[in-house]
Amino acid sequence: MRALAVRHGFLGSGGGAVMRALAVRHGFLASAAAALESFFLEPVEPLPASDAGEPLEQRPVVAVFGLARGCGASVVARALAAELAARDPGGAAAVVCEAPPGGIPLATHAATRLARVLEDLPGAAPRAVGRLCLVGGADPLRVSDTARHHAPLVIDAGSEALGGVPASVADRVVLVTKQEVEPALARVGAECIERVGPAPIVVLNRAPHDQRGTLALPSSAMGARLALGGREARGELGRAIAELADLCEEHG
Image (cartoon, rainbow, N blue to C red; front, side, top):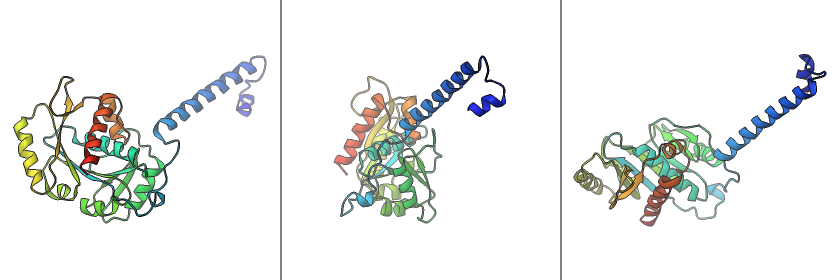
């Protein structure tokens, strides 16, 4: 920094002030970078799953279906996965999905390790984002057979079809609906899933604050951005997702 100031003739009667201004600016940028890193990266990494004790515990596999397009099933899937990752000794979770990553693509070391574990699966294209390893292009059954020994797995099954392989391999199923969808359709959708898998937990996404009777997830633009970036949702949405994770673990 001093050499730069000398080269441009900054040192002189006003050189000290210039140097102090440059130092303050440099310190501000360093502090901002450190704050960003501390928000997205873990201060202390958990032990790898292989060091967490023997025998290796099988982690839960959860399939998340959307009852209709635009109901936010992908946000729910990643928010749930991030919550399960925060609870797991390995500190990461896998998500089978075809949607691209969202948010700032910073990953924890735990998620990066998990991506290396899953990169040899046929057709898999794992990418570490936040606490999550997003796996595209792979058969959910193959991913489940491997991932459940290392980390929780959430299958973002979309809204094209209800049931199938994602429901059959899952320990728990979540069915995401929205306010515009008739409640009767949720019951029909749940029956379709129960033919091949466990009875689903039905959640109403982006629910109004006075919603009662079903598991309601409040609308939160910030929470959605955090979830798409592989981080736990905050505030009311975070508390609702934690309740959903409790139900998945309770009945897993």
